Every structure is written in C-alpha cells, then in structure tokens.
Length: 331
Image 1 (cartoon, one colour):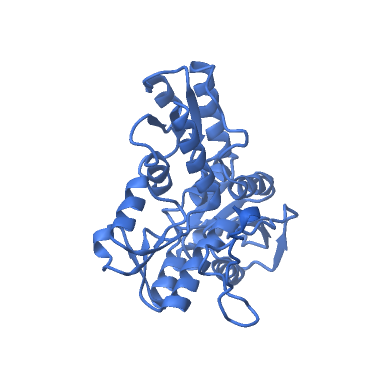
Image 2 (cartoon, rainbow, N blue to C red):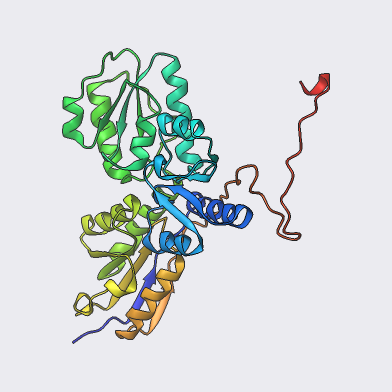
C-alpha cells in the first residue's frame, strides 16, 4: 500500500490581514479593559481561534440583549447592519469595530450609491453574517442572488440606476459567472472599479489552482462555517483533485491517503498556522518524508487598529492619537 511521500504547501495560505487585525482587536481589548470582552458573532469563522479567545476572556454572543450595560463590545470581522450598530450605541456599550476594512469598503460604496438613487444586486450566500451586514446597510433596494438562476428571478424596483456588489469571500470563478449573468440581464448595471472579492480570497484560490494539478489529494484546513475555506475545497474538487476540509488534524482519516504519493495542503484565511503544522505532523506520521512550499505571492498588507487600542510595543503604553490643530489653518 502506497503512503504519502511528500507534502506540498500552498502559498499563500492561512491568516489574512483582516483576520489578523480582528483577533488583535479582541486581544488588545482584553489587555486594556480586562475580561470579559463581548464579541458579536464569532470574531472569525474558526473553531480554534474562537476557543482560544474564550479561554482568554472573550464571550461570544448573537443578541445584544445578552451584553450587560456599560460592557465593551467588539463587532466581528464580517461586519454588522446599521440596525445592530444603532442598537449597540443606544445600549451605551464601548464599541470596537473589527469589521475587515475590505468589507467596510463595500458598506461605504453601498451607502454612497444609495444616496445617488441606486438599487443593488448583491452576489452572496444567504444567512452569511457578511451578507446580512452589507444588506443591512439599507432598509430597502438591495436584492440577494446566490446563483445564475436567481439572476433571472430578481425584480429590482427600477433598473436605470442599478449596481452590483459581492460578498468578499466567494469563489472568484462563480462570482464572475453570476456577474456575467447580471450584466446580460441588466446591461447598464454599475460594477465596482475593483472587484469586491478580497485579495486574500483570490490569492488563496489562485494558489489552489496551481497546487491541485501537482498533487493526488488536497487538504484544506478550515472550519465548516468559513466561506473562503469551503470555496478552496470546492475549487480543488472542481479541478479534478480529491479534496477534504478539516477543522483540525484529529479529523484526518488514514484511508484518505491510501495510494496517495503527494498531498497538497492549504488553509483558509481564518485558519491559524498552528493547525497547519499539526496536520503536517499527522501526515508525516502516516509516512510523508518531505515538506515543500510552492512559490507564491507574498502578502504584505497590514490594516491599522482602531483608536484606543494602539499600544507601543517597546513601552507597553497606549499610543496617544495626535489631536488635529484647532487654529484657523487646521479647521
């Protein structure tokens, strides 16, 4: 029986800048204000990350009524609706927003175009918190499509001013196909100058496209609730390579590796590298003798933290934000 000989690692894989920032916001808030810190929804869709933050003092909730008055609240990386923002402010919480800046960019675009009279078609997955947050930027005039068939059924109130926006963690290819169907039905539709699907989602999918033909099996490290992780597994399978997604090394099954010489390994944008290392150790225990990284794009993007959580690494003290000038020149 053949056992795996080599593990080929996708590059890039794992944490993106938005996930790094969201986790750091919760950890900094715990450091500054002490436990507990309340987080609306899972900060990112990864079981290991959520459990680690729970152990440090984070409490994850879905309903704001579960947060005591005066508490510190963090919005998850997926973003929230206007209604949730307004309720949190009305309840008097100290709020830190960990919404990924690339999701916030979509929210800003929706708000700007809505003021100009636009309605929207949103490409995304029903029930996903990012979709609920983006659609919740408006009271009406934003219509969800999940696939090409939905495009034929959607009925905007008007088509003279119609724009399309996209969930940031979709399959790049699927989103392109749905966008083409939207353009075919609504030729005047306005599309974003830069696609909404985030750089990290695209880079990880591009890496899987290079990885899959070179291996006999693809393992994706990611939690079942992670949209971008699910898309990586689906993409590998679509390219003709057997693929499984695991939340941890414990979920690996020895029979998956029967007759497999080379294993491809990647991780969704919310999966920490420690889980990848544990998966590597488990595959080595099954017989793999070498680990090799692909060449790939190096990601250098880093998003700034919100005011009030910036701490100087050397001194450990909070960085004081410089106040704008109040004289005539600064007004």
